Image (cartoon, rainbow over all chains, first blue to last red; front, side, top):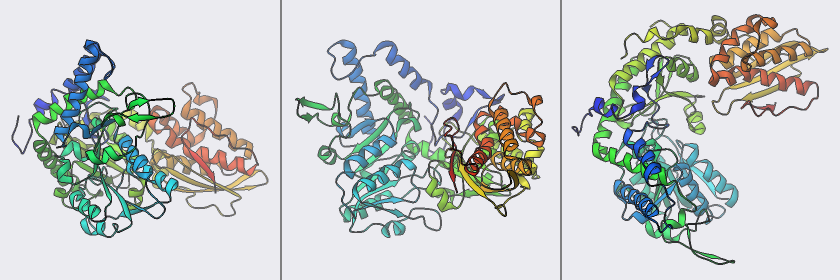
Length: 414
Length: 169
């Protein structure tokens, strides 16, 4: 579709109907992609196409609609497996979101922990990879340890080594920080985890949309991510796990679909991955997620990563030139993916976001579901701009212009 | 695309960011704990992290002094600053009444600005036009209500409409 260094954003943008709308009389500049991405027409069509032509409950119906819907749903499972280099589609479990995938792991793996066992997280975790483990410590007496940031606000091999030891049972780390944009050296951390016989979990909610993620390269035991951050619909999460490990886990939720034989007293479980998909799943959104993966595959994750890097570089360069602008995260833009958290002047990020919104520019402001990281950074909140494959340099220019206007409103000269 | 963005709707933003509000944000009044405080309370908005600590000196049924601390956006902090000024010297009843009026102004579309004299506090009326910022403006007043309730030994209502958690300090 394009070269490896830049994307034809005009052609891409034409496929996202929402990008042609206006906000407060201005063209929408959508820079909140780390929260959720916009959806191409093909995804929207797949969603309504399912309900318009195929709607049926899956796996148990014997009629044509049920068969078509089941095939479409299971085809996406195979597609996801190929997308992340999984050994089998049986290693792909559909959940509601990354949060549910991580809760599934915390609930099932956590049940095996004993007092004194250690769960290693990082200082940069989203609440979704922190709170479930806090619940585990309350139930089991296990303790949390944290991999700290280095002086460049990155998770590195040395800070990881300081946290992992013989008592470590679980290591669960965020691959790409939703605040700092930094990439953790997951493969190296996975080796350390393996050396002490600990389970290695990767929160790939931010990385899977932005870079090629191959589960065998990561060396992880489990990987979690969400469809809605990579052009897909809300309500679909993925949990990938090594087949032997998933087979060994107890179920998370009980109910229909996840059983084999049920008597009044007990039940046996369905084969993988259905053991972990109790009840009617989110059929329509899973099928639409398939259209999103088609879209990403057609462009290519390498091309997307290159585009994001190019745009992030440009944005860091332009923002850095603004007087009174602080950027959080690694100093070298090459060390961060498409997320830039910042504060401008002494204007609170909520005021920045409100003022930018009046120019049609959507950014996130606040603690980004990472309150402990905010405390580590020593700030109550930040603004955050995050990019995706449809964003352009002109939108970075609009952001810079919007910030200058915010500064003027608060009494700062340009 | 970036050109001429300054032609945005200046009226609406001006309604939110009135000069009085920006002035209180840049030069907060009564910042810090109040001397001789007889009661204190604090609150925060979990969704955005704004926080206010309030201390009040109540002598013979009159609010003789107020001080506030905390951090947050211009609306939350200037609302607190303006409140400490406007409440100083008021009786408990009068303070409660003003707090009610300000909260009505922030949340009630039908509120008639001419029905009460709110003085400078009227500058907060524009906040009502920005739904996601209303809780910023309300925070200080919720904390005040809490402090006054503690001072008079009343039970504190748990207002679930307002995502503000107030704890006595």
